[in-house]
Image (cartoon, rainbow, N blue to C red; front, side, top):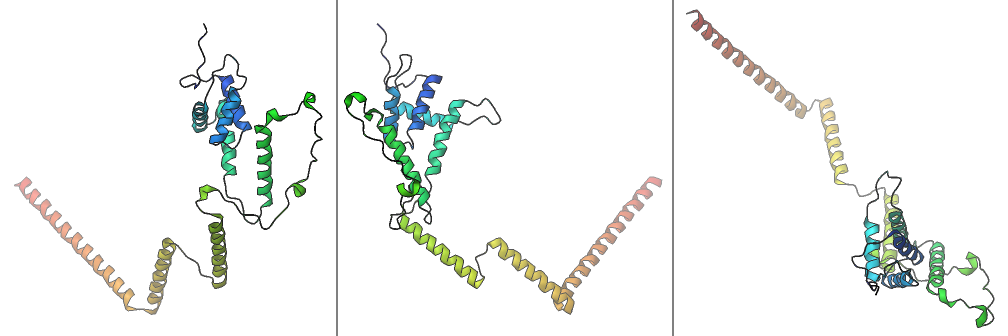
Length: 258
């Protein structure tokens, strides 16, 4: 009696054909979520060959995340194809997760319409009418982008949950930044960093010292006097050191010739 197949696939190694089958289903169902992973698992287990192992949602999710988080070998032309195929849909999902621009909503509408059409085509592959069931309906007319997605100024703006702000807060922030930019352009003043402030202070002090030096101020005279006193102390220290060295040499000569 042949052993029964495992339902979960935990602990079973994935073969290359199994990886290709799983990644093909992942690419067909995007973006991934809890519901989409169930669809991927259902499509993967449908008409599964005998040499394949049945996998549940957790097994497929673990394997996909493992492939996605694996590092690609840098400079290796023979990079594993399953890594490339796993990272490509993940990058696509990341690019679609950004905030939609407020000024141009046409491209966002077109992208959402394409995603809806793709999801409808993927989720209902079994609803195709066969000739035996009756007369097929005529195909729907193909509309252009301008006809399929009319521009409406009253459409609610949407934003990704990753930004942490609601669409109203983002709109308010956008208006505030524009107002600040116009204010800066009108007044000519802007916020500078501490480094710039420190450099400006140093430059102003240098300019002030140069100006005082040209006018013969007391500050520059004090600096010159301090330098002269330091030079005098250095000269006195050297003279004392020379005198001590000569005294030591004289004593050594007296002891040597005694």
